[in-house]
Amino acid sequence: MSFFADKRREVMVHIEQYMLEMMDTYLKPIDTNWQPSDFLPDSTSDTFYQDIRILRDNAKDLSYDLVAVLIGDTITEEALPTYESWLSMVQGPSMKEDGGWMKWNRHWTAEENRHGDLLNKYLYLSGRVDMRQMEISTQYLIADGFDIGTGHDPYRNFIYTSFQEMATNISHRRVASLAKKGGDTLLSRMCGVIASDEARHAKAYKDFMNRIFEVDPNEAMLAFEDMMRQKIVMPAHFLREVGLKIGQTFGHFTDAAQRLGVYTAIDYVEIMQQLIVDWKIEGMRDLNEAGEKARDYIMALPARLLRVAERMKNPTIDYKFSWIAG
Image 1 (cartoon, helix red, strand yellow):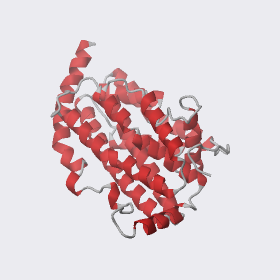
Image 2 (cartoon, helix red, strand yellow):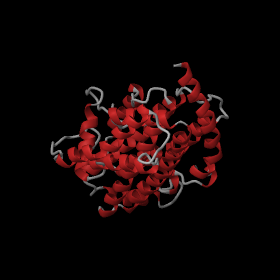
Image 3 (cartoon, one colour):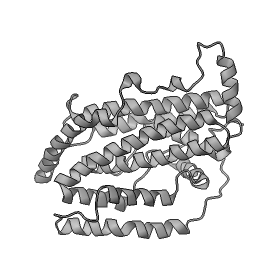
């Protein structure tokens, strides 16, 4: 066990230096980055109240499911303290504040933090949301924590974040498209810039994991296999409303996303297929017997899951979220 822990630390020293070198590539300068106020009505402007009326008029025709998915996405983004604290507990990387892991963690968190701020303010102004109910769900999600199946292993965490950033990119991008079709061009632009951030972050985590595959292919492959066997859970899988148990609301949220085509079981499979391509899993050499078996499992999995996904029926349960006003 000590040997593997020592190997992890050795690999992470290499990766952390690379993370520091690539920060300017994958994260934008704070002074010139977009901020929520760039999109929302300016409270110092003489047209502030008029701008709010326009925002509310454009939001009033958004479908029930779309508002539900947008709220669920917002709560997920607002639970950022949970994700930052989880990543700061990973074992192996240096915990020094100027080290690659902690510095990336802080700067990535700072960039992600804008997403929840922007969507929360939009929903508050939209007039479509019972903000107190939404805020209770947000506090629950942070207080309840989460278990994403990665333990404190940096390899599994990089695999998880690679997958998850790709999934959030898809979700925000499709909400942007649906908002545009519904006539809400402001919401479309907002979700579009958030999706762009998520795509850039996905590239970063995939790149970091690629470096791990290069220097420790067997352990990286076993970590990938393990995450695929237990399935990638969404960060909001503990989502709940007042009076409900942990996770009870999450199923209804994912049902709405599936009905809209915002994020589906087929998307899950396609992300997995993309990671297999990006990490060059099929042609990977220098694997031991366990690594070869892990690769065989990974390569066969998408086709099996796709057959299941194609047989799934669209959920039709009519559920009323406490979050949505009226």
